[in-house]
Amino acid sequence: MHPKHSYLTYLFLSLLLFISPFSYAQKEANTWYFGNKAGVDFSSGTPVALTSSALSTEEGCVTICDKEGKLLFYTDGIKVWNKNHELMPNGDSLKGHPSSTQSGIVLQTPLANSKKYYLFTIASSAGDDGFCYSVVDLNLAEGLGDVVSAEKNVKLKANVTEKLTAVKHRNNRDSWIIVHEWESDAFLAYLLTSQGLSESPIISKVGTTHKGDKLNTQGYMKLNSDGTNIALALEDQHAVELLDFDNATGQVSNPIFLQFPEKSYTYGIEFSPNGSLLYASAAGEGKVYQFNLQAGSEEAIMASRIEVGKSLNNKWVGALQSAPDGKIYFPIYKTPYLGVINKPNILGLACEYQNDAVELAGREAMLGLPTFTQSFFSEETASQEINYFNDNSKITTDKTFILKNVLFDFAKYNLKTSSFVELNKVVSLMKQNSTWNIEISGHTDNIGNKSSNATLSDDRAKSVKTYLISQGISETRISFKGYGSAMPVATNYTDEGRAKNRRVEFVFKK
Image 1: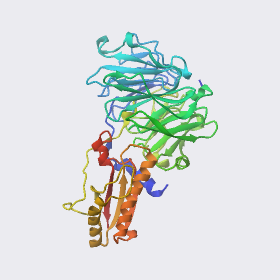
Image 2: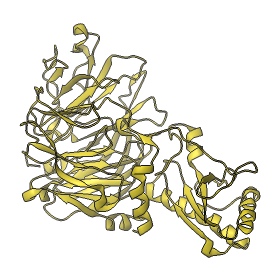
Image 3: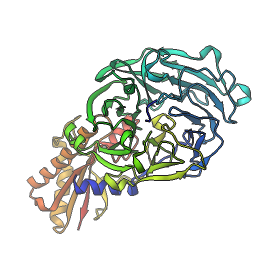
Image 4: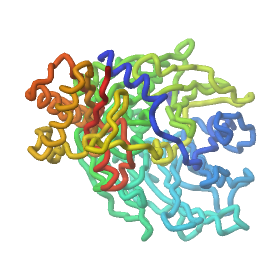
């Protein structure tokens, strides 16, 4: 197996890490086992090395904890070990493989208090064993779990690449599991609901045909944590492909092809927690690159690529994986530590790349890290005060107000006449307080293309500025910026929450 801007934008993303009302609450990804019997535990809030693993793998591995963060089981795609590091009954001869990039992923059956888990596996090098699932039942073996004989190695699709990812449906109950066919341009999205797994996938024939050297079966595929973008590495083509994902329909669309230099051997993929940035490892160069997904056009996104760090002596950098602490970790091939991107929401070198961040207590990292449902790493919007601008508001400077009645048609930025009453109140206040300036910000929900949303939010903020100027407010007193979907004030998993996130805000400044 081959070893595998602007200043305002920069300032905004730099500050976002510190002011963002987010938390990382899910604990199902607290324990990681990977590499040569290596492991880390995030239960304390920071990664602590573990030496209890029975697993030794070059690449593919999966771990899963319960909602309290206690280990349930783990696998290399062939064998399944319980929380006591013992092979489960019937827990061998699965159809994944340790040299498959993403040899498996685990999803809990979406029923209240369910103790049954779907373990999906992927064969190596687009082999005939393909994409299968087995069911692990933790009601059995005195709570330690058993692979159910009647639901073991159920084949869903032969000859798929080594790429496997999953995310919550927009309804926040069901889940999508996505793979990619070999010698095809087809993404296959399987839906898991409380009724079980639909074995008839949503098929999207879009983007690059995955073919040629079997190296192109390798490399990670990831969704962002809110399920609106998907990206994958094509190792032999030295490229990354970025696409939109509709987490309500399962459709993939709008491919963007990001070419890397020869001998890059692109491999690891991960999105920043807020979804505005994409990271990719050029394993062959020992480098990690960052892309700004809100840069605009395909050309602008490609032009935003920046090398944020590299390994010593060009050692291969493998998987990139979000963690419960909001950071992104990566292995460097055959080293006794993990590297980290400490501030992955921040644009440029300020994301703080570090090679030797977590010592592995003598164990050895290889290329892979566990594959998880990406929704585990969503930034949960914390409760926060929302100040609407109205007659009873106590208007002060340096306080953010939402223009509740400034409304737009879907995907439009033209102001409606119903918005003028509220905007005229803003005009009146600015005329009464001639030393005040105003900063206007536009925002969207998370549905749709990130760059398109950034542009739309910018245009909506600009339309407010244009109206204020038309009413006699000097342009020099007005600044504006669109932030796309990067700063939600409510969940994007409900219609009500998404409606709150489609907004225009302002702050008066002296």
